[in-house]
Length: 446
Image 1 (tube, helix red, strand yellow):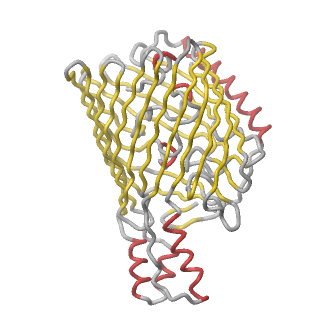
Image 2 (cartoon, helix red, strand yellow; image 1 turned 90 degrees about the vertical axis):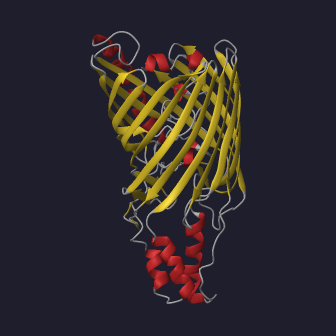
Image 3 (cartoon, one colour; image 1 turned 60 degrees about the vertical axis):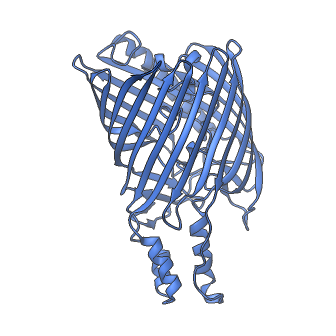
């Protein structure tokens, strides 16, 4: 349950719309920081009240300890960055970012409620709703988790419904700021995932291995997601699937995770660029159009991570490789190293994360004539749109000032060449650029 999961001593240990290939533009609505601040403050207060109200129904701290349990979690964050023409986002699922010279309250702020229902025969349910900035740049509620869980014994667990992806270390609770050390999970790794959940089922097998515990997880299902674009449009994909396997080993203060996952994209038929290329009647352009519309388009993710959570030292290292079999798919080596040193209630930390694209671009196969220039540029932009090459070095401090609450301050310096995370509104785009991002956040989990 949330109270057990977010003990500060163990908080770092975790066991325009485009549909069917067409993009519809929707008018962009800028954030109103003051109004969002007041609204979110009211929601946080209501959530805290609700969390205490949950004690009327249940007592105790484990997810199965009581028939009904209500918990609340949230983050109230503020971000400031110094690079004109750029907008900082924590994930591709946000449609609006923090612009230079403005204090942005929407990048890291979030409110969540979780309801757990337990029975005495191994069947229980969990529901989690959150309110945060979405791909349209608007504040709207969404259902993040909704599943049934069956545990006939301590070695087998089956879940069905809307389930968390949990691809990387610390990935089980990406929306709960209190559960991880920095203000936000490293965006060069976690921010590239279009969704934190899928609609399907998973099976987890647990076994004692040596002096530790091993967990093998098999999962699969549908993966609907939405990606915010710099022009204010949203790419919405509803016909995607995911299939994966993870292996986790916990021994003492150590945890190790190995991941192999494949994403399948089936929404490829309606592509305006492909239709335009076919209309040129050039063989190489037609071949490129076929690449754009091939189905399914597959992305393979292979990852490894290990972490150590001692009395004072906190260390996490994660590596993940994203590879795809189509010309416009993501191709990158990503990873991060996080080090923290706990001093009573205060934990200073340092973080280095990277995404390095290894994609190469193919020519459009059209002659360099003025009439074809828009298509040639469109082919190039289609290939680089999903690529990210950027590095981030951050220093921060976390202060656990009260039970189930913390406050964090963090400064990031980011170097980027091309990025689907950071919007570049400069004309022409900067290409190589850098920015400094300062943030503060208040986290709670009751």
